[in-house]
Length: 395
Image 1 (cartoon, rainbow, N blue to C red):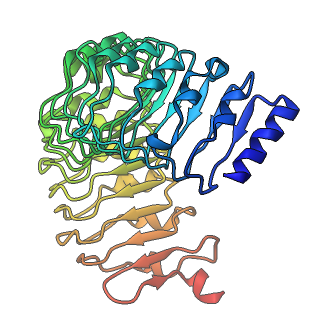
Image 2: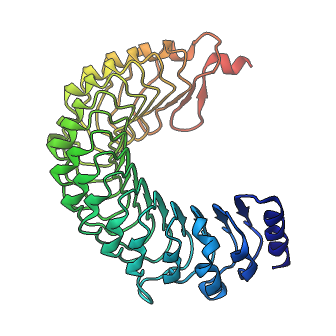
């Protein structure tokens, strides 16, 4: 505590606007903190603070009305103190990785009074619900509630009309409410491991600024047509480990700005539509673990692709057009047990450094064993010991 008192004294003497007391092992907040004037930023993360060791005088101090940023993450708070709502000018509130458990005490509804909040992080606690009053955070731009037990979002969450980033991975949000259609400025949405089982509401098509969407590790059957028709600014789409069938992915071909497309471990036995050739900006693609029987030749149009993951599928060959992937660095076809051949043209791709053919039936042609010296060398993994191109052997 003495070290924190010294920090407070230094801030008072210099009239600084920010106090950082992170990683100090502090167990309590001294009353002197409430005497500081003009303090805008208070960061006390990675300490041992509990709500019982934060004096009432701190929350009630008129001087603390100037606080815009409060970071009490990585502490030992078991609840959100109702007196925190006295800090009505807060714009950033970080309480992630505490011990907040709403089974013992609910989040106070008064938290909705903090109407100037722009960023809130409540991740890695034991929060089971958000009070409806949080819908009054109408200036909210960033909300992170990852790794809690939240089942539903506030009924009027459409009032978060300024929201740009929503991170909710590791919750139990089985179904998204229609109100999320009000997030017309959202750019990033993360819903991994959320137990989603329903198709998203059609109003997600209002997310026309969306660039990054991750709903992997759920049980999602499809994307709404309005989503793949309107969300044309998408750069990253992660839908691995879901329940999506071939007939449900056709609309993805509209998303021509995609750079990352991950559809591993779905139900794409019938392959992907030839229209996926329209996705000419792709750089990373995963179609692994789908038991796919074939790949359309149109994928050769992915001229910018750098990483392609095709592990555990059932096709017998790759289309010759993949030799057009002149930027390719990694191609993983391991455990494709029916694969008997790959295009010879792959050997001439100078950027290719990792070709994984383990547990396949491919017999390498001479073109792959006599590649001229180059950097980076091409490492070819086959069943047994990995083989290197002649260039790496000479080094």
